[in-house]
Image 1 (cartoon, rainbow, N blue to C red):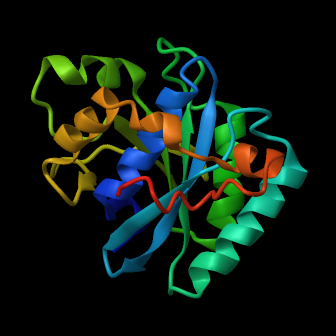
Image 2: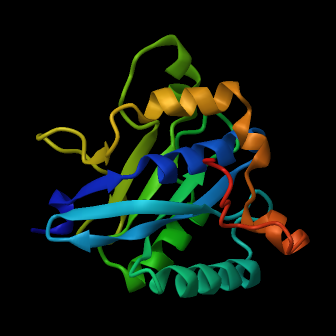
Length: 202
């Protein structure tokens, strides 16, 4: 099965962590990486690591973070399978060059990789409705090596493994759990802050 037909199954915790990162730095662009593995026609996204809220495209800290993340998760049989990006403005739904360039870098090592772009308008509307679909847009690389919004005649190709993930997310938002989230920017400023966020879901 080709990349164009792949489905991406995302765990609840990996999903929530990325959205909380964007909420914590609501007036900034933020990014992160997706961790998981691929099996046949599915890429399983089992976890995520929030990266930066300042200077998203600066190479030295990005390279350091990707090496540290890769080393840690490879011991668990997982690898970097994609990239997450949230734009600064809620009315900006474009996939920008920084996101594409980092996505290209990950693609070189994992050709089934995806980019997830936060849909801030959909996130803002979440408390008003009962939408169970992800508040993210899925992008994959096409035959011309361009990142395109993934469309499928057979339904959404980005699937939340736990159907109640958005309900849990709203609980986390109402309790302001995002205040406790640590990204790589925070860790590089103060190495006592753990980028693995081991207590976030306790």
